[in-house]
Image (cartoon, rainbow, N blue to C red; front, side):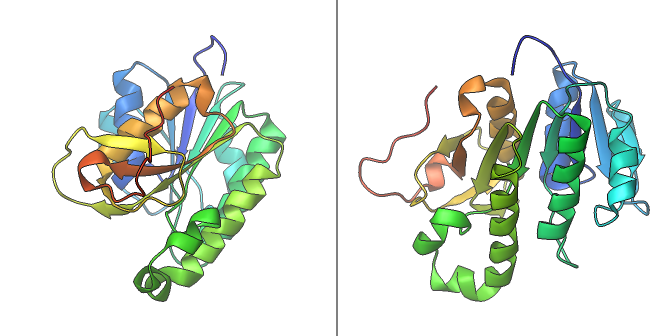
Length: 221
């Protein structure tokens, strides 16, 4: 991703993984634009020095207006998900805007059970969120065909226990496990800082909670 330090535009920045990633990026003295829903409380983002803009991800014009505040060659991050098919249609609006505005790179946070990891997903997971995984898979495919430089990260089950510092990325789609949101944000940040992660699809799991076929190796750039 070059020697520049482009702005980082995070969609879904108000809570969870998006907020944790914004904190890490600000701690590294990067300019961060946090895109949040119009009815959201921006206070925590503002406290970290994040530039907050409001947009409904299902409204393409609002998305375009939101990213207009970023400097050129920005990096996009989407942790979007939720009702009303935001997992697909919201991400499509964001990806389209990123293409139109010339984003340098795009990081999509998806889920285990998407794409080629679906065949390794438990029936319990498919029964619980199968339709959501289908929409997220469509978003992955849309990004991959968009022409943007991309990285896709599929976290395992998100947990609320304290961060362990043991988050890791795996190229194997056959892994299972869980990860804390803060640890997930840390590996997302590492992927943004490492050009070798471009064009790759990763699973993100806590090393201590990993279930994987024998011989599975952590991604070690």
